[in-house]
Amino acid sequence: MCAGGGGGKRRVLRQKGEAYAIEVRSCLREHTGRSVSRGALYATLERLERKGLLTWATELTSPRRGGVPRRRFVVTEQGLDAICESQGAIANLSEGLDLALGG
Image (cartoon, rainbow, N blue to C red):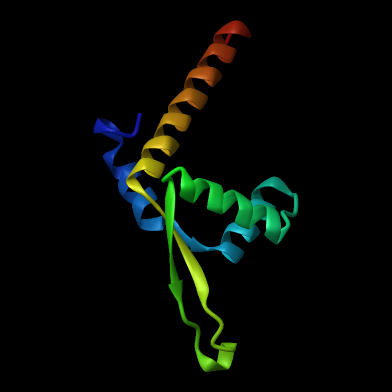
């Protein structure tokens, strides 16, 4: 779905496909209205890493922020492929529902 005509979308996903866990958690809360525990979030992120859908890098923070390392998660090419495939499946499902409902 993203390949070919969706190259622009793929570039945007690649550019914006990195975040810290706290940003992911905030985004999930904002878009679903539900809070996700840190443990559940990290377990999910680690599972996605094992599947090759994302990777992460450790970054040190400034001494003002305590110098505690943070993990920045990055979507991989395989992860982008999975996102595009999922978007295609959702589009097909939506189209099928529209047809079934007479739309």
